[in-house]
Image (cartoon, rainbow, N blue to C red; front, side, top):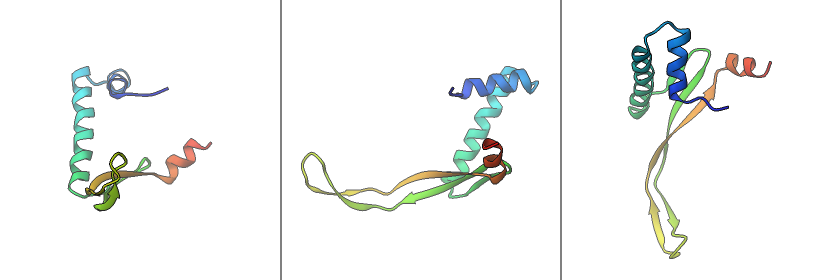
Length: 93
């Protein structure tokens, strides 16, 4: 089973007692806040959940698979996620 954004909004609406529109605003704000913090290079730690850690892959030399020419692969940013110990233990019960 996959859970998507609309299901998170619905859960906040039904279980959290928020209006649907307020639940959607809360979910959007949370995701936007995490993205902004990571874009600024900040680690995001959520107690009992986990840590989002910004990563930068440096530019490097590579080879084009179609033409076999030497190319430069540009620097890219990504995110690593590490589960909190308590969350991992709860998953493995």
